[in-house]
Every structure is written in C-alpha cells, then in structure tokens.
Amino acid sequence: MKYLIAVALLLTSSLSLADEFTNEDVERWEQQYEDVAAQGRQHFTDPALGGNGVVCGQCHPNAANTHPETYPKFQKQLGKVSMLWEMINWCIRNPLQGQELAADDPVMIALQAYIAKERAGVALAPGKH
Amino acid sequence: MNNSRRNFIKHSSAAAIAGILPVSLVRIATGQPSQDFSFAYISDSHIQHIRGNQFVRNWDRGLISAVAEANLLDPKPDFVVFGGDLAQMGMREELDHGYELLSKLNYDIYGLLGEHDYYLDLGEYWSDVFKREHYYSFDHKGVHFVVLNSINTYDEWINKWETPLRRMTEMSGLDNPNGSPFMLGEKQMTWLAQDLAKHSKDTPIIVLSHSPLQHIYKGWNFWTEEAPQIQALLAPFDRVNVLYGHVHQIQYNQIGNIAFNSVMATAWPWPYPSTYSQATSHLPVMTVPMNRADPFSERDATGWQLVNVHSGRIDVEFTLYDNTNRTVGFDAAAGHPVDKTFQDPRDRIIPQKHY
Image (cartoon, rainbow over all chains, first blue to last red; front, side, top):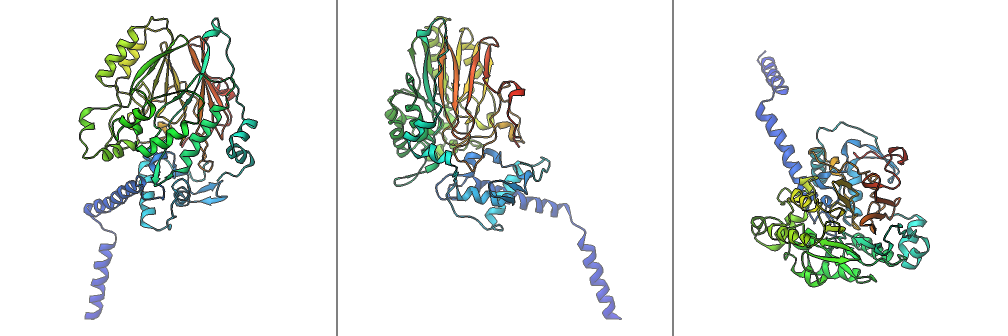
C-alpha cells in the first residue's frame, strides 16, 4: 500500500509539471532562440565562415532575398525538392569558396535562426519559386 | 558553374566576345548632333583581397568582362566613368589590382569614390591611384559634369573607431546598424553651390555620385543626407541627369527637371529594399524592377552601362551579362526616363515574384 501511494504521488507530481510552465520559462526559451539567432547574424557576417573572406551579408543585406518561407521547394538548380540548409551549403561552397556544414551543425542552425528572424511575420509559401 | 555553351563562349576570351555581343551604339539624331556623345559607365566591382596574390575570382571576372566589352564598343565612347567601390575593404592591394584591371581600358577614366574605397584611409590611396580629387567637375562637349564624393559622413562617426580597419569593416556591411548615413558635408555643399552658379541654367548637367541623391532606404544607405538641398540646387537647371551606383540594381525616376538613373554593379546584385519585410523603403516609382537574380549563374544581374548623351539628356544601355539587355532612356514626350522595352506592363516578360 505504501508503495502504491508513493507511485501515485510520483505520478501526480510529474504530471502536474508536464504541462505547466512559467513566464520565466517562456522568456528563457525565447532568449535561447534570440541568442542563437544573434550568433547566426555573427556567422552571416563573418569572413571566416567561407574560404575567401566573402560573407553571406554581402549579397543578402538583412538576409533579404533568402526567402526561407518558400522552402522546402523544388530548387531547379539542384534538381530536387530541397531545404534551406542545402541552399546555404551551396552558397558556402560556391560564392564563399568554403567547406559545407552538416545539417545539424550548430553554425548551420544558427544561420537559419537568423534568416528566419529577419523574415518573421511573412506567411509560409512552401514550394514557391 | 554555368556550363551553357553561350556562357562558355562569352567568358572564354575577348576575341570570342567580339563575335557574339550585340555591341551597338545608336546615336539619336538631334538639332545639335555635334553635341551628342557617349561614355561607358562601370561601377561597384568590389575587388576583394584574400591573401598574398589571391583575390575573389568572382568579383575579378565581373570587372574583367566589363573592361573587355567596353573596349569593343564601336563607335568608341569618349571616356569611361568608374562609379566607385573599386575595392571591398579600401586596401592598397585591392585598389592596385582593380586599377590594373581598369588599365586595360583604351579610354580615359573619370573615377568617383565609393565607401569601400574610402573608409580605410579616407580616400588617400584612392586619389593616388586615380589621380583625381575626391570631388571635381569638368566640361565635355557642352555638358557640365559634376563628380561628387557622396559617401562622406559625420566627423564624430569617422573619429570614433580605434583603428582605420575597424572603421572600414563597420562601414563595409551594407545593413550594419553601426554604420552611418552618407553625405557630402558642408564644405562640399558650398563647393557644389559655387560650381553650379558658374553655369547658365540652359547648360545640360550630369551629376555622378556613388549613392542616390534621394532618400530611398536609409537602412542600406540608399540615401544621401543632403538630398533635398542638392535637388534644390539642381532644380533651376533645364536639363539635369544624375547617375548613381551603390545600389547594385536598376532604378530610375524623375523629380522636376532632374532625371535619376542608377547603374549596375559588376560584382553582385542586391535585392530591392522592398524585399526586406521588416522595414519600409521607397523604390523610385517609375522603376521596372530587374528580374530576380539566379545565383547559380554568377554573372546574372550584374553588368555595365553605355550612356548616350543627346540634347543634354541620357539613355542608359545596360549590358546584363546573363540576362536580357535593357535600355532606360529619357522620353522627351513623357518628360521622364522610361524602359525602352518593358515600361508598359503589357510588354513585360513573365514576372518573377521578389520574395
């Protein structure tokens, strides 16, 4: 009996935690995003991201003309439906003459966090050319 | 990169270019044909040093193409204007290498300063290379040319950085919130007023500036602080034409007697400021936008210009390497510049949405 009560207590306590979070939590999580987006801006303007000193921001001020809302889409030049990170790697390889990043590389995630932040509020338009 | 036969030929050699380029120069008949002339306009090459003897190949190729093609013009233009931003970081290596590429031109060069040439040493080495003052004027076949240094800024900003390289780096980011608005400054404004006062109001004027002499979008310095005052100085003249670089895109409009035309970059294109969804901007209303650039074709949406001067007004023929060439010229009946092919919306090719 004691054992059952203990289990029940454990269950209720963990259940009550699962769907409850405080404003502090929300602020902390949003701040996590803001920090990573800020790191993304750093990488976006960092001559060391590629191999020739060219930075993303040279062609894409405020990440304009990256249209993250249109991905995934058929990228005619890659010949398949692609994600934004694949296009970022194309840019790193070609105009930046650098080394590709893994899809889950923290730098790649930060770059996308920044690009999405500059495009906040624009409706999703997946598949649009 | 782009392996189409057309592009292979186009980029392979100047001799091959001669065979295929539609290099035509149509002089418009006027009452004073002796006053008609043309000049080539190359701008925004952003030659970028990597290390040692290495420079960013892509930007080099844009300038090399423009120079080779301008040399093939027939009839010959009277001179070439280089519209600023020859260098990316204002370095001696970049200005030297860029001017070495420009030295292949068979014509005299009138240069003007861009911010990328200026903020490392405040234009000192640029003047050594181009053998020009930071701003000056000259007369050619009855037209008065005014060459401005429009990329000056507040002394307080210029003096606040710990090193010249830091200053150059901060100004080189187009969208950098640590940057500062472009301007002529008091001294140059006084000079401009005095220079213009020496000429009668029926003298055709062509003003060459790096930044637009109008307020389009401050966040990217598509902007010159004293634009309203400069326009007021130019307003009394019958025929005024302003040509500007910096924006890496086609823009044009008319304010009173002043016709504004932008020129293209040889290095890379910029999106229209309206595509930045977080801020409002003011694209000149008459502008028929360029198509969206295809990054997989590295010369797409870059180019250079031939400017035809007739009766004190100008036509700008855009040579757009991997795209349909365009001509934006002054329409006397309409009283403003128009795109000679695409101005009427019914004549436009399938539009591409600028996301």
